[in-house]
Amino acid sequence: MSGSPIDLLAILDLETIEPHLFRGISSNSGLRTLFGGQLIGQSLMAAFHTIEGRMVHSLHGYFLRAGDPQAPISYEVESLRDSKRYSTRQVTARQHSHAIFSTMISFHVGEQSAFEHQNAMPDVPPPDKLTAELSKQPMFAELPERIRNWYGSERLIELPDRPIELRPVETSQFIGRKIDDGYIHYWIKPAAKLPADPILHVCALAYASDWSLLDAVAARHGRTLFDERLALVSLDHAMWFHRPFRADDWLLYAKESPSAQAGRGLTRGLIFKPDGTLVASVAQEGSVRERR
Image 1: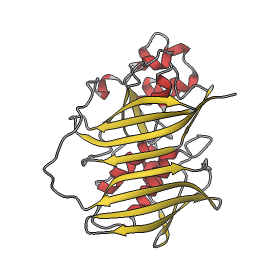
Image 2 (image 1 turned 90 degrees about the vertical axis):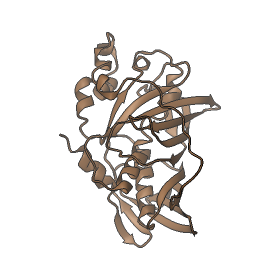
Image 3 (image 1 turned 60 degrees about the horizontal axis):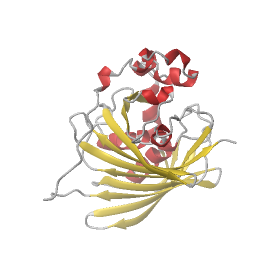
Image 4 (image 1 turned 90 degrees about the horizontal axis):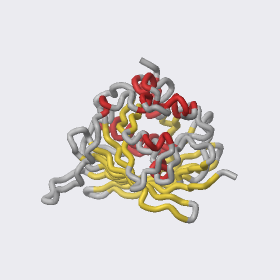
């Protein structure tokens, strides 16, 4: 196996500088800018360091500046509320003395409720049926090298230097076909098992929730995140956690883009366990432009 799982654990392992000040390492993902999911996952972990006996139920964050993938990030946590059932934290991530990400995170003690419902999971092939599907497409050899490297069959088994494994369901988008209704689906999970700590699993899913989310915008126009003519930048990110889960089991990430206009695209996502249990919801708006 690759070193990817160790990298993910290292990313979520923050150094305590002061009781409400923490430092995180960069993931060295090979991207030109810092991966937004790292800021989300590390911010959540920083907030957890100031909480006892409560689990996160929602977070709402804004990306303020592009991050430096080579520099460490400091996380300052402000306690805004600690009531009988809820706690609220504001976390600000900084690099080079500038705020690059800010998020509000709410925690709940958990309670019984008479109201329980959820949307049904989409009917899609299981992950073990998708291992080599894209690489078997007739036009696979004609795809850009970046797409072949990400989704070739050998890379779906092991992803060096990438802590999250992805298996796309709709492969036609990679050969230029539009996804007219905007619904795309990925199976996701870390590259190896995580320790049995619910906080780690929640933070790992927060990290993974930013992977390819804006792909739903591009797919409606027959484009992909790998299209170098597109400039796609996350502006904000919101996430709600509904039910317990293990992030290192396969989870289905069902995404859609209901609207794009004025240089921005909106995406929404639902994350399911293989048995159909809805565990989290995500929403994100991004800047969507053609490169000049």
